[in-house]
Length: 293
Image (cartoon, rainbow, N blue to C red; front, top):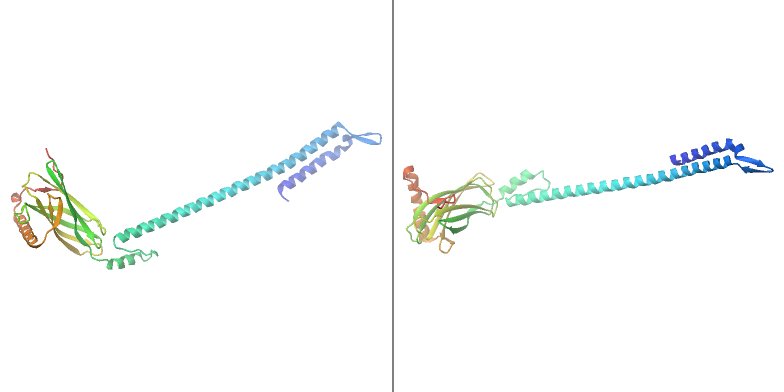
């Protein structure tokens, strides 16, 4: 028996307790019959009203309980749905992070174990199997502006990632391949500890003014060292490439021309190191864009 039914029974008992003592005044004897008095009608109406109120109270209470259960169920379902959405978002974010980590490590020639506990060992093993990087010249381009020319030279890391660059660019110019070679200069172009992923490039832009000695060809000796990400051993780069300012194209240097250019660069570098500071000529090529008045 629930609380509402108990309250209803108490109400009925209370009504009965109210009516029974008043029976003598509720009926008036008329001959062999009895007639309900006005007080009796009032008592009957009062009793019916109290019973009706009791029934109404039970109905409203049960309706309120059903509503509360509905609200509670809706709230629980909403919370469960929210928890499910949060769990899905968390799972997706973990999956996205895992994929990003895997792709990032893959770019640098590494592997990741899904168990995570072997990540350090896996990294160590994968590094041992990574090939040596080959640093080379990817592209040379030139743009002519009023009063100066902008040169962009790009290096590329092939086969494996590389890092910790200490690379200079030695430059000279000429009217044609046979020479004479002039305007020798050096640019400390690639001095960085940046990690270069496999297939990525590292650019360097430098400039020269058009008041320099006239020339059609430029020659670049890219010389220095760099490291692989798997060890501390320094590896050399010694690349020679030419650029034609007339056709705006780079070209490979071979045969006698390569020999002559390398001899020229070797002698020029030696002379530059032997000169006293006051004897060193003014630089022709610059890392900063020149100001043309």
